[in-house]
Image (cartoon, rainbow, N blue to C red):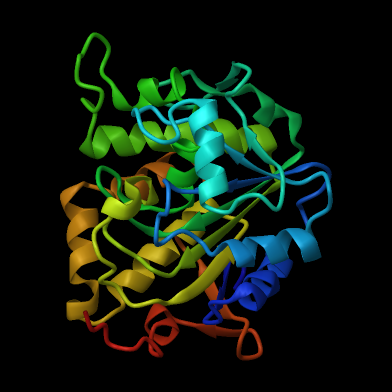
Length: 313
């Protein structure tokens, strides 16, 4: 394996699977832990099951841990803190603290080596945490092509009024979503870099590859139907490795199973997230997959998806 980053893999899509893979990447998560989770719009059907996260908090995290979120840039059920709190109740995120980090204010974090930003605006209270766990539902995305750990952090930690505007809207434009394709992927990645540089080595990444629609969880009940087979859960200490592995697992599927999600990623230029993260020195796409279900055996993406049942609508 040499110095290649490790991506841990389990087919066990359950609370037990999540706890098992968390143990592989949790050693650096110390002190007050922020769990960056997309809690979803009201009644969103595809978000990570609440019971899994509840067991993670009960069995692995102490009273200092909290889910962190930010308010949305678009007007909807999470636009204001009051609306966001109501949506959290509807979706069942009531078993642990949920910190809406931009509720009381924002703070600028430096972006090193970026071409779009020198700093990024994030929720102020995020800087009160010592460690960050990106617990991500991997899926497609209307504008990003795919939503992995990079999107979860880059969009999800940027505050709802300043940071998200910096990412999505060209200065002076009346179109909120005037930035797209490669430039959007680059801006998301630079935003992510600001946050993960802040936490240093105290960041871990888990991508849950289940209920993968071409839509993001921000679309709630309007999300497109799930058309991609469930795969499992992967985790790493390297953000590029975990997101590239997720993408590679999709490409390793049969064409008829991967078609919709691949089309979404490619037409939105989503793969630019991966190449730009590499250019920014955020990680390595040359990784090793370790199958924790079978004695920590090194496997290929094709072997990792060999168990996938052909998808039937």
